[in-house]
Amino acid sequence: MNATDRTVRTVLLGITGGIAAYKAVELASLLTKSGLAVDVVMTANACRFVTPRLLREVTGRPVYHDMWQDIGSWHTEHIGLAKRAKLVMVAPATANVIAKAAHGVADDLLSTVLLATGAPVIFAPAMNTNMYNHPATQENLRILAGRGCRIIPPDSGRLACGDSGVGRLPAPECLAAEICRLIADGEATAGVLAGRRVLVTAGGTREPIDPVRFIGNRSSGKMGVAIAECCRTQGAEVVLIAGRGVEVRPGCCHRTVVVETAAEMRDAVLANLAMTDAVVMAAAVADYRPVAVCRQKIKKQAGEITLTLIKNPDILEEISRWPAGRPVVVGFAAETENVLENGMDKLRRKNLDMIVINDVSQPGCGFDSDENQVVICRADGTAITLSRRAKILIAKEVIKHLAHIVAARQKEAGNG
Ligand code: CTP
Image (tube, rainbow, N blue to C red; front, side, top):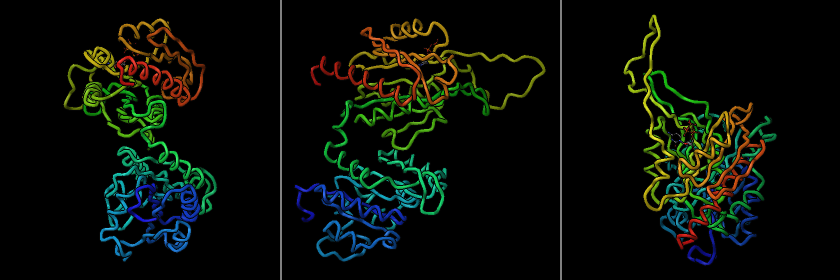
């Protein structure tokens, strides 16, 4: 098997210096047995845990660990490796390689290949729990996820350092299965939303009053993030527009735009609307904003003060009235009374394809909680009541109906 053999699908396995490097040997073996050509690139520290010779025996191919290694046929090996890879997985991915990749540092062969490749990149982090949970590592993972890298979260359990917690590299079989699935189907062809582009909003907007205060709401963005994650799992290209403070899980979408106010959210939605098949407005958008934002902090006064508010644009209504070729539009309704009636009224008034109505007066449901109970109403009159359950399960149901409507729309347009 050589580098110019185009009938063989090549994956690049980057191994970095963590104790879990031993599991990467098994992973390389499983991938090789499944018929893939595996180019292994090891960092210097990875070579302290497992030897290039072992990986060479397992894959039957040269193993790369040094920028200046003389392997005979290639002059610019990092470019050759980067180009022929159909997919790249870094497993285990240490906090160091994650930080380097997030910030474009290219000081060894693996980090250079990561900059040079155009192939999908998957990181499988494995490290001590505190290192994984450190804001720097989480921020770096968010940066990578925001660029479209896929992150396979570590498992929990007993770690090599003796601690127990999150940080274990998932079993090689799971990592191999993920690679084989992506290679076989092609990321863009798997799932009920394969090849579709979906825009999701999440969280609450903040309308500034003065430099230190704002009008906000209780939305955590968990429902929107769950929707984004499900769309991505179902093969869609996902853009997430999130209010400030929303915890955007690494890998839940391809791109994240963080916004503060309703006006910023509207601008971000409109800027990303082209070629979008569906918009899911799970965000809690402020209906009003202060007429004027004070430039200085408002000082305490003896009597009452009055804040005058003006109406914000209704983003959902604006998209659903989009003149030609508008995307499928899904709204959310947060209600505290006459829940179904008010929700249905919003569906009609805002000209939506579907609305997810939730009763936010129920304790433990809706705003800032992990569970929800909703009624999904479609413009064709279908109404499905979902009893209380985890938001990710609600999201799965919503996506099932969304995919159905998107497919029907494409069929109507004659290009499904
Ligand atoms: N929405 C929007 N733009 C706004 C207000 C709301 O796009 N300025 C969207 C929300 O993202 C949600 C839907 O409209 O998908 C319904 O939001 P909700 O707050 O329940 O309803 P409102 O239209 O604001 O009406 P009301 O507050 O009177 O219930």
